[in-house]
Amino acid sequence: MHPQSSDSGQLAQLVQSTSFTPRGSGVRTPHCPQIKKGFHIGSLFFIIGCMYYFVYILFSDSLNRYYIGSTKDIARRIEAHLWNHHGFTSKAKDWQLRYQEVFETKTEALTREKHIKRWKSRKMIEKLILGN
Picture (cartoon, rainbow, N blue to C red):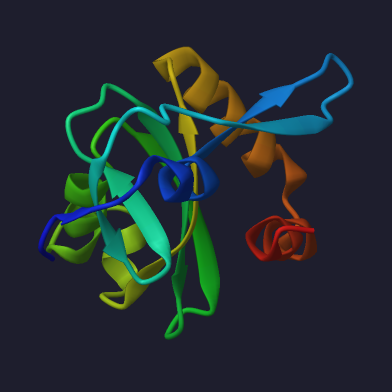
């Protein structure tokens, strides 16, 4: 994983936040278009040097299960899921990042994480990942 530069337009398309209305419908808005440094893992873009919080969804082929979490340092957190530890993600070592959202505050990220977890629906999570 080597850092790569990205132009502002590409960053605005790849890094988005979701704001929610009181009824729970989401509206995506681009974030931080002035930032030009980051790196890609697959089709996902990670910001370097920003103080943002992330909600992420991992998938394990061996368990055929999703995991939803939030963090300030997404690359480090995914790495931690793949190391030996206790907890749900220790049951597999093939976790792959399938989705991420970016937020300016920890509170926003935790609220969104809880919102997704309350769905308790694989179908809804897969729709979110596919952008539907």
